[in-house]
Amino acid sequence: MRLVDWVSIVWILALLSLLFLFTSKAKGTDHIADVREDKSLEFYLAAHKTISPTPVKRPIEQEIERVFGQYAPRAIKILTQGVKGTMCPSGENNSLNSKARYVNKDGSVDRGLFQISSKYHPGVSDACAYDYKCNINYAHRMFLRDNKSFKRWTCGKVLGI
Image 1 (spheres, rainbow, N blue to C red):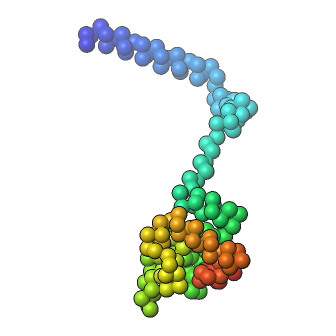
Image 2: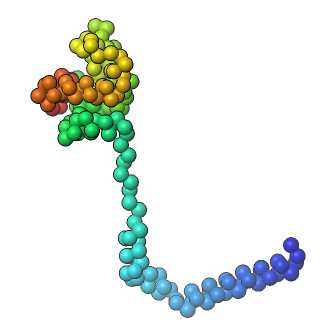
Image 3: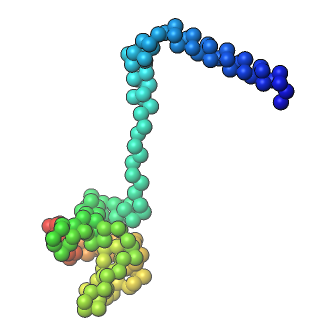
């Protein structure tokens, strides 16, 4: 760049600085109060307030809601909530892990999302037990057979649902 160009840029910046200084002093220090009293600013801020996004539901939660309908909150509760100091301290499957596997002392396995027992439900294949849609549908059938109760699950008993 040539020296003439640099001089021009410096002059323009100096003029802009003076213009800014002049307009700030013309308003005085009351310009801060003017902004606070400006109702249009409050309206603008209220209208453009950041809205926190609705949490996105995972496919597993969506499937539970679809299958269990109005009883979905209870189904999610036995999976995710427990009572400290009981046989259900943190829910049946608080991470909603469709591949969860718990081996019992007798060698039977509680499988999948709703921890379907291989001992009490030998007709449920591993493929079904570990597929969240199949697991949810089977758990829903158990729920309906038990008069819309989760009493078969330890956390269902503990939570009284």
